[in-house]
Amino acid sequence: MSVHTEFKKVTTNALQEMKRRGEKISMLTAYDFTMAKLVDEAGIDVVLVGDSASNVMAGFETTLPITLEHMIYHASSVVRGIDRALVVVDMPFGSYQGNSKEALSNAIRIMKESGGHAVKLEGGGEIIDSIERILRAGIPVMGHLGLTPQSIYKFGTYSVRAKEEAEASQLLVDAVALEKAGCFALVLEKIPSALATQVAKAVDIPVIGIGAGGGVDGQVLVLHDMLGMNHTFNPRFLRRYANLHKEITGAVQRYVQDVKDCDFPSAEESY
Ligand code: KIV
Image (tube, rainbow, N blue to C red; front, side, top):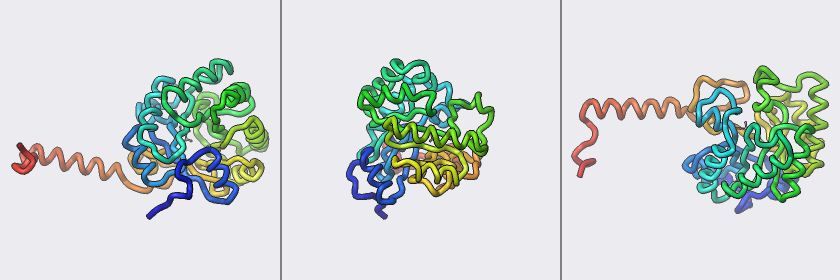
């Protein structure tokens, strides 16, 4: 089954065109060469080297500990596996909130050292100086509003954001400001569907949701979650397309048994 669109290489302009003609955008995370190659071959439009690598790859409880060097390592591994998809790299916590000059030099390091195609930053008006400076240097920026996990200690919980009117209208203002600044796309995480739909209609740039309903221009999930590698994380928005937890533990159990039983390696598997 081919799910490729007409685009041989997905660019920021291609995403814009997909929104214009009503074609939904598919996006998944990847953090390494092998998985990136698999998702690219399967026809994904955008690969996000998410700072969720902090949780998924490194086992930290939050996304805060991951460093710029770690992100560059993950992103450069991903880029080597990609032929078609657009690769967006998360700027890690602490790499862009201080001041816009620092933000720009960190974004430049990501682009130069990883070969990624764009960066993603969490936040709205409060980081607009950093976003504008990065954009002026010719680096495409994806915004991220709603539940922004780098601010978990401010929120205190990972529950749905912008349920109250004040936060919802601020989110709309921030979305418009990000578009005006020049962001090429926007992620909305864990907000009510009605609000996400309203944002997607209010801006011309593609809006990609995670836990934001079906009224937006595309969807993103964490790869390891949608492949069912983790059976303890069960948010309502997550659809599992495989049960790799069962597949992998089953395969490892069979291998362990075969080794213990002296069934592996066989004569045919030996030199
Ligand atoms: O880091 C990440 O995986 C993300 C997605 C949840 C959008 O930012």
